[in-house]
Amino acid sequence: MINFDLQPFCDTDRPALATPWSVGDFTFACNARLLVRVSRRSEVPERSDAPDCEKLITASWPASAVYWAPLPASTGAQLTACEGCDGGQCKCPRCQAPHECLNCGGTGKVWSWPTLQIRHRRVDLKLVTLIHTLPGCVEAATEYGGALDPLCFRFPGGLGLLLPMRG
Image (cartoon, rainbow, N blue to C red; front, side, top):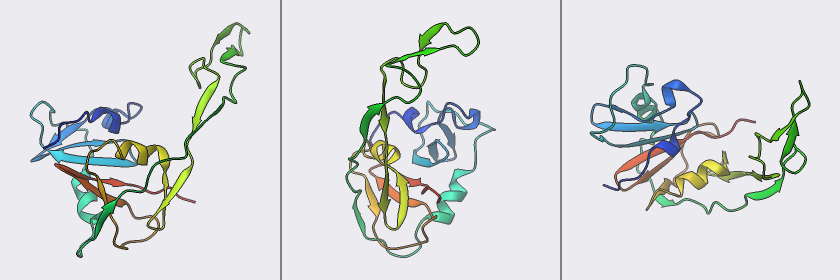
């Protein structure tokens, strides 16, 4: 089993997804668009507010034999000028006092993450980049499901789903 930090796969803005949780034999982490399941980690407790992600995995996983292939490279992110400030400084709309831009952290630059097509699914490049941090990760390369069905992937010690973007 590969041990890695599950917290980057969580969504700290959503209480039910803010930290990893365990159910039965597995531990989960999810940010509402990317779900990772690994063998149960004893240090990760069960939570009553956690979503039933096992049901989603069971419903989404390809039923037939699958050809597994490496995920496409996650290149294409660009550093661009922040549109929310003037070089990292903003003015408070109420008192006009200058403060550090919350959008770029005062750098004046933000990362622009384009979308990527994988198996007729339009996915967020930032999430694919996060999946690439999982060693030995491969995706289900067999055609299955529709453009809005999750992209299935696995890695030594776990598996996951990436929900495609709509529109």
